[in-house]
Length: 214
Ligand code: SIN
Ligand code: FE2
Image (spheres, protein in one colour):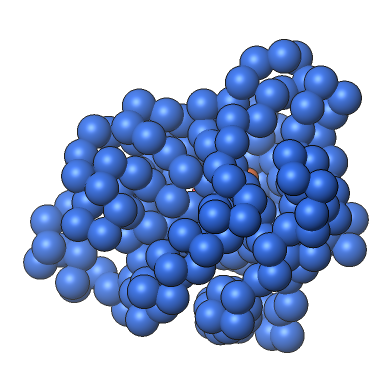
C-alpha cells in the first residue's frame, strides 16, 4: 500500500461482518508506547517458538503480557499465569495497551472491554499463521482486539468451519481488527509476510491480540 492510500484509509473503518471490523490506523497514536512496551515485555519474557502438540516448532515467535499467557507444548494449548520459560508471572499489561484495547473495542461496539491477556506475535518475512479459531478462552463472546505493527500482511477472516471461504484483509502498521459476539469464533489466519523493511520495526511484523480469558 502506498503512503497516500494509507493516509486516506487511516481513521476509516471497514466492516467485515456484523460484529467484525477493521479500524484503519487506530493504533497510530499509540505506536511509540506499543513498540516500547513490546521491547520491555520481551526483555522479561523473551520471544520464543512454541512447540505444537504435534511436535512442530511454530513459525511465529511469541510472548505474552497480562494475567494469563497463551502457551503451547507437547501437552496441548492452554493459558498459564506464569511464563514456563522463566517461572515468573507474565509482564503486566502496560496502561497504553489497555487503553488502546478498550478504545478500539468501544469504537467497534463493545463497551467496557477489559482484557486479561495479550499474546504478542512476531513474524519474520516468509512466516504465516495457519487458519485457526481462538478457542482456549473461557469467554467466547468478548472481542479479540488485534493490533498490527510493522510490515504489512494479509489477514484471512473465514467462517465457522475450517473449509469456509475467507475474505482477504490487507493490514498495515497501526490497523486494528476487532471481532466478537456473533463473529467471535470465526476462523482466521495470516498469509506469509512478504519481505520488506519497515521504518519502525525493520524486517518484522508484530501483532498484539488482546483477549478476555476468564
Ligand atoms: C492471531 O490470530 O493470533 C494473530 C493474528 C494476526 O497476526 O494478525
Ligand atoms: Fe488467533
